[in-house]
Image (cartoon, rainbow, N blue to C red; front, top):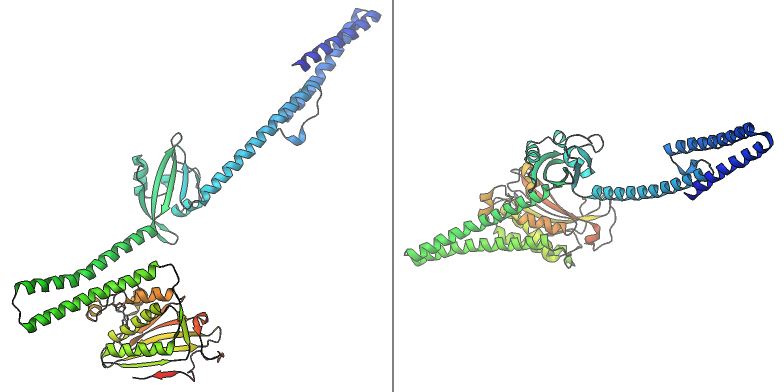
Length: 457
Ligand code: ADP
């Protein structure tokens, strides 16, 4: 303000002094001429400065501030300072917005921001994957036009968003179940959150199936036992009949005990995150013991063959014994009398890798059709439910085998031909082996070993 006043006083003083001096010497006409000339020069300089300032204000930047003097210099200095402040604030806000968007982008949930007319303002990659959107091309499109689903259409129309909507969609990797929730905010804007609950639903379905299966498995023997108890209370039995009934009751209670034992083993294998205590097991002794168990179970109805290379296996004894025992007992149970069961432990020397060892159980039994093989390790999956029950099966044996082997970094391989027999085998990596003799690569993957021992009855 003061600078403007001083400048005005200066200009007027200059006009008066120069016009006074000229008027003193040359008279009033030249004096008026000089006063006009001074005024014109001052106005011209001001106009030029105004034009430069106006031109700069159109696209204000720091690197092209025009030069000016006096009041104009002061104005430019203040405008440039405001510009710098404003730029700093904008950069700060942009940075905040960028981090906010990065956080939304990193969210495991799908996020869509919609304006008051339900057009998509922004969506993260997860939402794009959930709804098959293109995060750039589909902006400013109506959500209901892109998310073509009658339930979603009705949900948006209802304007009641207290509860999430469960929506099925075909994702790029198969069917998806999405939980979709709209959260209104601001002036009619909406936030859409989507969560993939496919796995949650699958787990819940598995839990329901499991409870139904366990209840069913326990209900059958319980019903039989309850029937016998009722009969014993109400009917007269001879001693022989009574003993027969008690024998049947014991069979059923053994079945329940077996089931509970298997359930506990499975729960332990699935739920215990700790690696079990490991020890070295002599595999010749192990195979010998398995063959003896098989003979006891077979009661001379089958030919049981066993052979084992020298060497030990490192692992949890109870878990591996239970896994191997399940495979052996299955082979006996699913092989008709007169058939053969072979238990083998052999060290292999593949051409293209480290030595490994394979435990396998082959039988000449009923075999398994190919469509059942991928599902055999599911809990309670049985090809022939009646046959499994008759032979004392719980439907949990191979699930136990699978989990026990997973804890030993190995997996079960099954090959089978209906009517001809099956082979269940498992390979253990070198790290788990304690080979009695130094290993030499022979090049032949399953060449007979000189020190393989046949274990006969
Ligand atoms: P189960 O107690 O019924 O034997 P498992 O989990 O041990 O349960 O086996 C699942 C199913 O796999 C069995 O019900 C049977 O149908 C099939 N199975 C397992 N082992 C054999 C085998 N050696 N030969 C033919 N079928 C087999």
